[in-house]
Image (cartoon, rainbow, N blue to C red):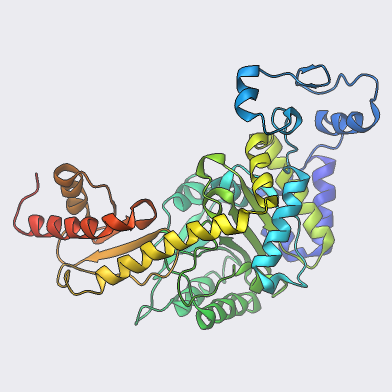
Length: 435
C-alpha cells in the first residue's frame, strides 16, 4: 500500500475508527499524490515567475491559448477562467461560495463541523465516489422501494453491494421511518450500512415533514447505538424545490455530529437547483467532528477524481460562480421556483378533482420535479406504450403499476391535457385497445 494511503488511513483511524472501518478495500488504498505533476505545477504557479514549463496547456501572450471563434461566444469571461484545468477539488472560490450557500439554506448546519464542498461532475459522480470509497461486495445499501434506478448500477453493479429496500410510505401516506429502522437494524451481522436519503424523492416527489425527519434521525441513531456503522448519504438532487409543509432543509444538518458511527455525506449540485443540467457541476461534502477525518476523506476523494476524470469542467464552474455572485441570482431563481410550485399545485388540483377516480391513485408528493400515479387495474408499461404511440406523450413506467409524470417539463397550460390523455390511455387499455 502506498505510504500516503497508509498515512491517511492512520489519520482516519485516529480521528474516528468507525469511519476508517467504513472504508471499502479500494477506499483504504486511495490517496492523492503529493509529489506528482499537479503538486509540482501548483508550486511552480506561485514561484516560477520567469518561465513556467510545468503544465499541460498551451499559452500565448500570457493567457491560455484559445480559438477566437470560441472566445467570441464567451467574451464576458477571462480566458484564465475558462481554458485552464480546474483544480481536482474544483475552483476554490466556487467551493467557498457553495459552502456559504449551504449555511444560509440549512440553518441546522450552523455550528456543525463539516468540510469544504468538493466539486464533482454532477451528482451521479458524487454518488459513484461514495460507492468507491465505502461499498464492498455484499455491503448493504438501504434505499426505499421508490428509488432512482441508477443506485442499482452505481452501488450494486459497479461495486457488488446488496440493495436492501423498504417501503417508502407507511399507512396513511407518511414516510415509513419504522421500515427504515428495521432495514438498518437487519444489518447488525454486517455491522455496516450505506443509507441513501433522497428528498425530494425521485420518482415520487415526496419530502418528509419535521416530525418524519425526526423519526428518520431517530432510526439512524438507533442503528448506530446498536453498533452499526452508517454512511448516511443525502442525495439532494432536487434541493430547494419544496412546495408544501415539508422540511425545507437537507437532513445533512440533522445528521452532522449525531453519532460517531454515522458519517453524513451530502451530494448536491447546481444541476437542478440552478437549472443548469448540462453544466455537470455537483458537490460532495463530508461532516465530522474530527478535522483529521475531514482532511483524510478529502484527500481520498481527490485520489478518486484524479484517477477517473482528473478534474471537472472549468467553464461551467466559472458560470456557476458568476451566477452565485450576481445580484439578480436570488430573484431569478425565485421566479423559476414559483413556476415549478404553480405546476405542482395545478397537478394536485387536477388529481383531487374527482375526474380520474377509478383510474388511479397517486403517491403523496409535495416537492421536486415528479409525481407518481398508481394505476388501478392496468399495466403501467401498457399505458406508457399507448401514450407514446397513440398520443405522442412520454411518461416513465416503474414496475407493474407506477407511472412517473414529470410536471417539471410540462407547461402549466398543458397539464390538464396531459392528465386527460393519460386517463384516456387507461380507458383504451381497459377496452383492449393497445396499438
